[in-house]
Image (cartoon, rainbow, N blue to C red):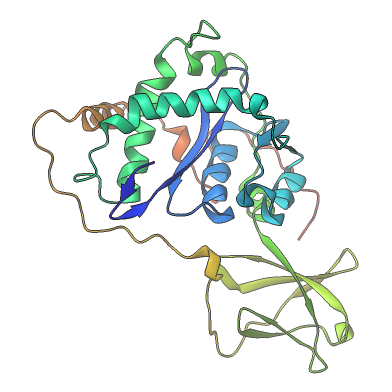
Amino acid sequence: MPKIAGHKAYLFAFVDDNSRAVVGHRGGGAQDSVRLAAALRPALAARGVPEGVYVDNGSAFVGSALLRACARLGIKLIHSTPGRPQGRGKVERFLRTVREQFLVEVDTEKVTDLPTLNRLFTAWAEQVYHGRVHSATGQAALERWLAGAPFPTPTPDALRKAFRWSELRKVAKTATVSLQSNTHNVDASLVGRQVELVFDPFDLTDIDVRFGGRSFGKAAAPHLITRHAHPRARPETPAAAPPAPTGIDYLRLIDNDRTKELGQRINYEVFLPGQDQPTPAVDLSEESS
């Protein structure tokens, strides 16, 4: 991905093995678990839960956050074998298409923030890539993917629980635990024990306490909140709005077509966890907290 506002951008993309459809994607300012979740979580909400996810061995793909999310949703997490790139061929082919057909059209003087880059990529993927006949399958990617629908979709609550983070802490004699400089009160029976703290990295005031596979309720909110969000979950603040385009702008023409199309039908890709979903949902969560 190109540099946006002077900073390198990275693309997370999930490609369906059978159809080559792009079921989830996001450009971000770092290769980490937060940006990975930002691509995968909406994909699962809109496109459904796959049997497995095949990923490489980068740091974002081997962390506990992805492992926990896949385990909660019943997804088999498969890592590629180091030194054997053959299994990544389909993704590499897709990325080459991105470089040859999308990135060459990106004008970084006009595309100055990540939200704009992501919007243009979505427009290109839906209006151009998904509609073209793929050389390997002989079908358009989206048409082939839809032929296998419907797919089981998780409930918003199941997604919320799956993408929470988990850290271990030892409970102090004062029946308190510390997480990112915030001190929380917990059940006094847990003094001296190592507990699991389960939380949303964007909201450190809401923490579930677990021990021995059991829930011990919520950790009491700290009187003084030093940090509201985990430092790794830092937001990517958009830069100033880009200048109005001049002349022929291929990606903006696609984006305009995409906007017109969305005005005529429901856009399933943009449904986020927590919103009402357009298709029946299946609760894939086994835990009650």
